[in-house]
Structure formats: structure tokens, C-alpha cells
Image (cartoon, rainbow, N blue to C red; front, side):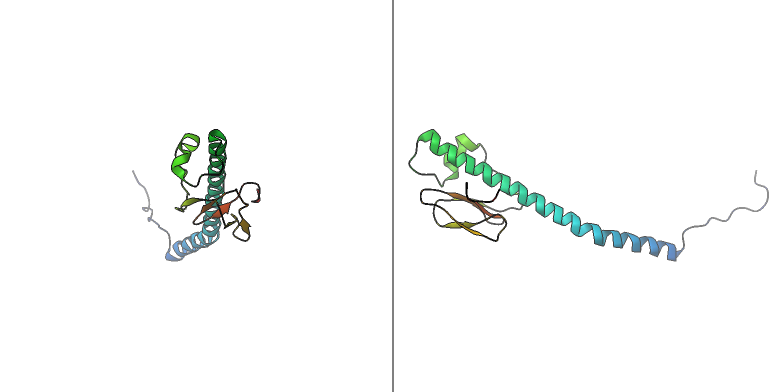
Length: 134
């Protein structure tokens, strides 16, 4: 049984709620760009690993068949590659046997040597075995 006065239910004031919302907004403003940057960086690194995997399969295909040149068809790589890797950002991969590709960092054009090849991504640029930065 209650004796004395009943306690008055007390909630948060509008100012207290606004302060909490402001603190959360500041945290989001700081954390969200860092999170998005980390996601983009991980997608780029995954794509780079995929480009190297495809390049290894192209080289294995040439050695296995004792072919005079590198293939530029993904369907030829099924025994060496299995399933074609997918770019995490939705880019399309392409095997390039002449010309040049832009490196993964996007700042250097790498020419493909005579009889060589490169692998490019429509979003994350490309990779040339033996010439691209590791």
C-alpha cells in the first residue's frame, strides 16, 4: 500500500531528446563517410584479387593447351577458372590481348606487351601480369 504522495511519472524533456538526436547526427556524419570509404576500398581490393585470379587462369589455359597466344574468351577458361568471378561493384571483366589498360589505381596507362594480355574491369580499371603494381 502506498503511503504519502504518489510519485509523478517523469519523461524526457524535449531539450534532452534534441540533444540526443544531435549527438547521433554528429556521430553519423563522422562514421558514415568512413564506413562508405571502407566498403569502396574492400570492393576495389576484391576486384583486384578477381583480376589476378582471371589472369592466372588465362596463363594456365595457355600452358595447358600449349597455345601460341593467350585467349580472350571467358568460356575457354572454364576448366582453369570454374565460374567467372563477379566484380562486387557490378563491373564487367574483359580479357584484353592488345592495346593498353589503366591500372587498378586509375592513374597509369599500362601497355600490353606483344603476345601478352591484360584483364580489365569496367569500374576498377585493369591488371597486366608482370607490369601492374602489386
